Length: 170
Ligand code: NI
Image (tube, rainbow, N blue to C red; front, side, top):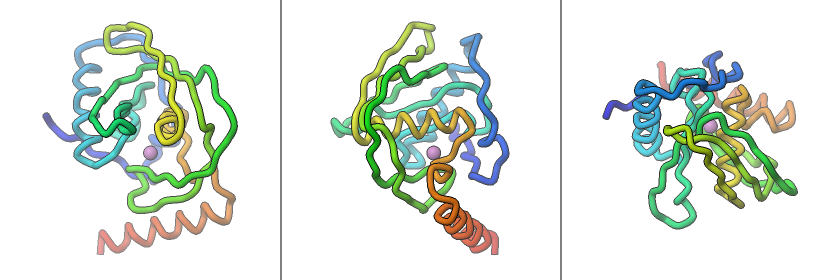
């Protein structure tokens, strides 16, 4: 099970809207499997395909997170079919390592998509898991969590990120 390289927020692929998946084949199934392994290896709870350099409309997520057991699912061509009031809470992103910020997200969402067999999937989530769904689906639209912050807060975070990057390279 090869681990995939997670791109960081400087990579332009994270700014592009992912293309709808119209053909589920062995390559896609392999990608999804590797994304699950990569997500857990990076101690993440969700991972979008563009974060591993593939601009396709799918993500993986651990829906067992609130039950304290691993329950990874793959969701292809996801859409949010219902949402409710916004709540603020802290979140982070594997493509923006070690930086966290409070972001507004719907407390409750309903998500529809497809599994690797092309069967329709529906999930209902609230709280932390609902937040994770919205975060991953934003990735697929080319949106990063700091886009939801004020301009000032975002540029402070961006500066912090660039500073860290320099420290790593130095
Ligand atoms: Ni992320």
